[in-house]
Image (cartoon, rainbow, N blue to C red; front, top):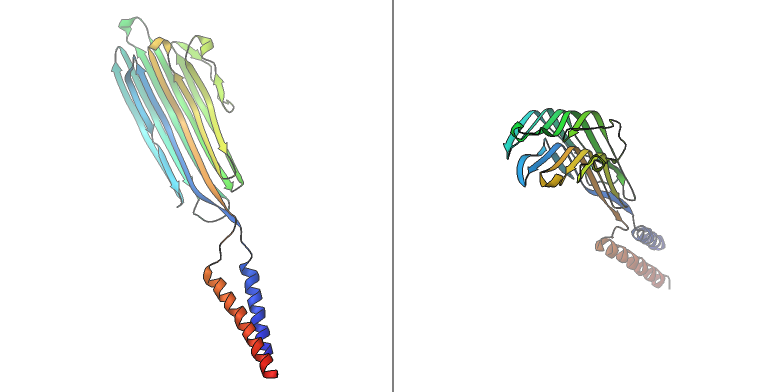
Length: 281
């Protein structure tokens, strides 16, 4: 009986030592990413001339993991309004989004990309107005990528743009563009007399903390807002976005049944000891 009491007591203490030890961990709980090749909105005198919205765009949400791709071949779109004609064409526009976030613990990765090949965008005043080109984007081939990787407390963002070829002219003025532009390269168009015009190459916006991290990359972003109210333009070429959210689990609660089982074993061990003492007396 003494051996039985000793065995039960030892088992109860072992169980108690296990259940009293909280377990810690972390996991990526969700992720989102999107990529698209082209967004264009051209307005003339407050009237929409050309709208091309996120062509070949793709997006995903995890968990579960995903790997998505979309492509558009041979874009050809045009319009004429208020004495202005606009045209957009491209050989290929593509977007992709991917993530391996599945709800389990450990480092994960989420990413996206977007790009175009041989894109041309032209907006011209008709000859009867005595003026010519408003905007020309010719022979544009570029792409962007964005990625977020890691786990709780160690989330990092990365991304970049690859500009293969790009020719830009605004109101007949050629704009010099650096194909190897560093992150957030801003070309001062106001210095050229283009008031209200903004051009950013390889635009990168990161926002990261212990529990959240996102990355946005636009290979080219052009805004012409103003120009004496004649021409308003918003163009994004090569867009990629990725984000992940993580949670830190400080302790895993022990089920009530385990506590009850442990208490019962302790009580049984005490009862056995009392019974053994009585018999020896």
